Amino acid sequence: MLLWATRLRGGGSALPGLVVEKIAPSFLENCPDHFDMTVLVAGTNGKTTTTKMMRSVLESDGRQVVTNAAGSNMPRGIISAIIARMDWQGNLQADLGLFEIDEGFVGHVAKGLEPRAITVLNLLRDQLDRYGELNRTAQLIADALPHAETAILNADDPLVAELGENAAHSIYFGADEHIRSQVPHDGALHQADIHQADATGDVREMESEETDTLVRVRSAEAGESGQHLELDVAGDAWSVDLQMAGVFNAYNAAAAATLGYTLQVPGETAAKALESVAPAFGRSERIQIGEKQVTLLLVKNPAGFNQIIDTYLSGSSSSPGGSGIPTLISINDNYADGRDVSWLWDVNIEKLAGTGEFITSGIRGYDMALRLHYAEIASQTELEPEVALETLLERIPEGGEGYIVPTYTAMLQLRKLLSKYASLPEAGE
Image 1 (cartoon, rainbow, N blue to C red):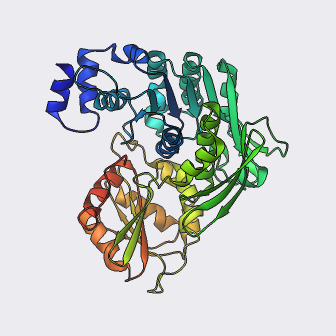
Image 2 (cartoon, rainbow, N blue to C red):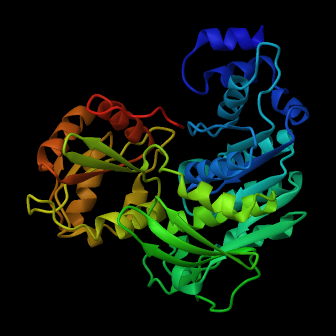
Image 3 (cartoon, helix red, strand yellow):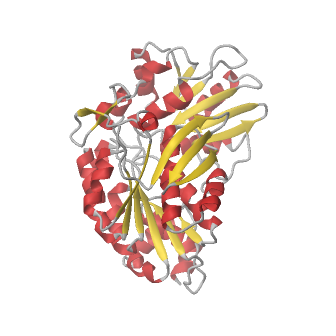
């Protein structure tokens, strides 16, 4: 009756889970009986992409995986994903649960699902109005780790690496120094790339010696639409042509490779599975509109925005029109975005000077325009998403490309509008 009622009601991806939370609050605690194992993915940036990579690796090995692919990463979203894979008798049509989880709820979900592994990708300042400072976010995850059999941790993020002290068993992934030096750290947002910040926010020189990691990114060479990775996986060499650019995606792939190795997926199988993964919706997703191409680049916090600037925007070559690549930056401050947008002032916007034409939009479009103004970068503001998108498309010449850089809810709005111009897969496909 419960399954029938929630499915009949329909609605958003998390609505069935919301109903179940109200009428069956112990639902998650009963789920371990239905799974052979569960895996959780936490961290500030990269959860959706890494979960998609992990799913491909596990399914390539014949696992039947249920996951919250649409990105609804609170308990109600996870419950909804589980319900969607149950038959009318409540039997689960999967043997492994793989869920990205919001850091604020990781303890609750881990206690209920008793995961085989919790993967922690990174810890960077994000939505201070929800989480407070990073030490609190780290503590939320630390409290969850004792409920897991294994912690899979980023050795190159100081706060994440320290979480191993709270885990029964820890496995680490990371990268060689020349790659590690490109990774932003919260306490050093405006420092040189050769610096990182320790857990207190003090800047320290990067250590050249390698930590004891199971998986290490040895090289990451940019390609036309992605990058070529050389991974060291427990002493074996993997070559992976990833469809996604950026050092952050190299780390995401390393995390997925670590899980695959841990769950005994053959190396060749896992590497091919990683190569098959297209960008997750809104995350470096390329959309073709006639002869024009638009790339969606989701941003949530200073570190992520800086990586988007370094990987895509600051290196932009001119479009056929000769005036640089048109870029729409759309900033909302809804709950899912974070209500405090002061983080925009921690972004290295100055790097965008001379790289293209800029349009600002969203609820806080004028805030973004002000930030560009102080960086001495001109922009046009169109608060209405539909008008802003039309303006962007008009500025992209035939055969050219443009970028859309939105926060989460702005991305959902703009992607829906883009579906009028092109056939787009549903979120999570």
